[in-house]
Amino acid sequence: MAEDDIPSDAPSELDPPEGIQGADEAVEVLRAWIADGSLHVTFDPETFSHDVSEWGRLLSDIAVHVANAVALDGQMSFREALTAVHEAYDQGIVEQHPEVTGKIIGRPTH
Image (cartoon, rainbow, N blue to C red; front, side, top):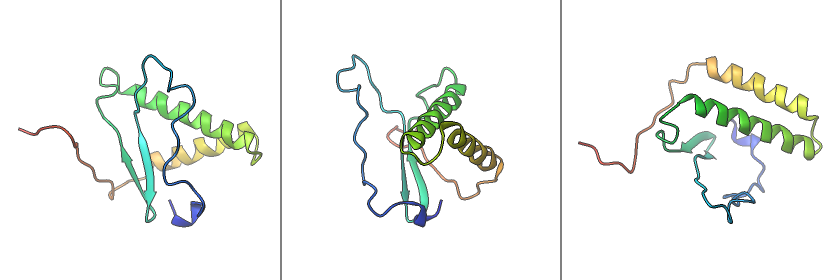
């Protein structure tokens, strides 16, 4: 992801979504930033430990929300946006990512 792709007026932190403040149960599952042109994410890999395929469902739900927002913003139709996201996902998932690093933080190691 290129640094040029991020508008200079982009918020540094987004507001929580509507509907979670009064929820009986809510958990944040993912945060993502682009810093100096690189993607940085934080999440708990045990969130869906019972079924890691739930991460795929979460990503597909996010894609639908992105396509909907793009359509509401008037950039393109929902279907065009969803197709563009899907094609970019398919391309990105098959590429090798040797620069990906990570660590589990916040847990004791033995």
